[in-house]
Length: 281
Image (tube, rainbow, N blue to C red):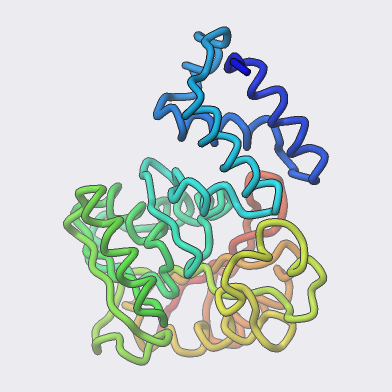
């Protein structure tokens, strides 16, 4: 039976709401835009346009996947982040809007004469490529434990036309060359393995190795803080994204590692999200 864009969106949003999607109308719109290969404005400008049978079938198939809880970004294969369109795969975390706050804070503190930035646990390359896109005078290195993540970050670099970034496989600092960086940034695993949210929502589909860390989610943050001074230039900054309730212990970890000017800053929802500190000999 023929159906218009408006009615297809209404029906899909209703189905997704029944399956506890947190944003059913947005999810339905993104999926239909993907099927039609059109911007979101098209859905409202041409809301009475009737979908073809093929378009209906393709849309319904994607909605069915979302009903089962699969993240929209994995379904369509990409996520817009900062000014970039990034390919995503189930082997990496989906870049979140809150991580744009980390990019914003990094750019604010990256000095005019900065030469190199290191992104630890780069995943899709979101942080590294965003910084590189804004500071073409700076060389950005992104590292990740998983070879498939490195390959994905390199693909995103190529498709976004960024030339001042490169990626390599490394468990944190293990394969990082002996050099100093003006800044180190990271969105490491920081969720407690016992956190009940791991069995809810989109995170059910994301790689647990990129989400959880021992010691109530603080183990990797502690390792990064302890090792970073060996790779930071004088007065270089370390910025780490973490959980909304981890600000106080993360500040202590920074201070214990010798960082000064340590502070925790909020994300766009007003929650603790990024702790930073400056390394001074």
